[in-house]
Length: 315
Ligand SMILES: Cc1cc2nc3c(=O)[nH]c(=O)nc-3n(C[C@H](O)[C@H](O)[C@H](O)COP(=O)(O)OP(=O)(O)OC[C@H]3O[C@@H](n4cnc5c(N)ncnc54)[C@H](O)[C@@H]3O)c2cc1C
Image 1: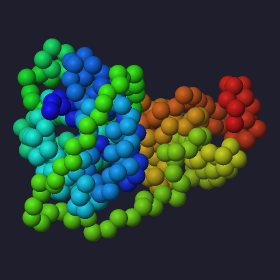
Image 2: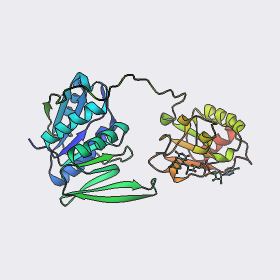
Image 3: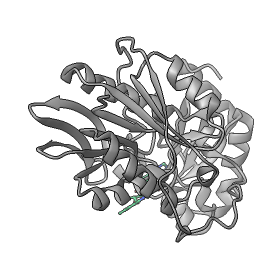
Image 4: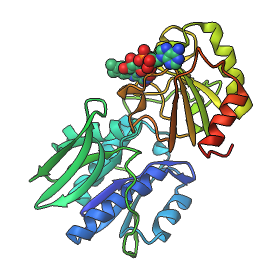
């Protein structure tokens, strides 16, 4: 059995995370160019539905399943050795992980265990000679670097969520391989509790974001923007200076050291739009409006509705 490209799946209990499908799409592009087989390694507990989703989609040649109670909750000290053992046995040329908090941890743990090079936070990958060309953002997204990796077996690549690969892979027949966990002994790290984040308001899923920056000058100004956000059915967000001042909590901050937003409309008031705030890694917005009228036009719903109507945005 040959499987030159191995994707490490991310899933949330019964649902595959969409990044896994992106990783498969990137793997398929390379597999098509190199005429390689592509497989997915999935760890967890009660994985029937995940395995069905993966094997019935016709996108991959192999699913490697490690279904075991010790993988019920993500724990790096249990996951990384088990994945490393599976990689040693499967012997892929390329291992793709998500550039998520678990994917980064797994890839960074695998690199020294396998003596493999890791290229992190990539936006694209293609086959090139006896290796790969990967593109990644550098200097907080100011420009892209293209990196050539060759003569290494395997190569580890973590891919960011914003990569948007083309999804036109040839149909493949999938074999399912069930594996036993290779881990023995006590885990060095134990997960002793899980709790949901205490976000008052989740700006990451909002369709309309009203974002305020340093130029609003006074905390009392926030009320008007809060009312505007509520009236438009959106949420209030901020640039870092506003959060540093303590006027809004950190779960309102958009940007490199804050959260990624993907609304339909992002209205920015008194924000300069620095690279750390507005680069594609932090914001996926079809329409970004910067309003330079905080002082001269009072913030009012009618003004914004008229403005959005003029821009042909239906809300
Ligand atoms: C490693 C690193 C990580 C960072 N992470 C983040 C992050 O996650 N999020 C983030 O936001 N920043 C981040 N920053 C900071 C970032 O570089 C900027 O300093 C910050 O985004 C600027 O915020 P601002 O746009 O509110 O303020 P400013 O850059 O000061 O912009 C204020 C804007 O308001 C305009 N203005 C002034 N008066 C008015 C008026 N009356 N009406 C309308 N407009 C007016 C000004 O012309 C200017 O364009 C980070 C920086 C570093 C180094």
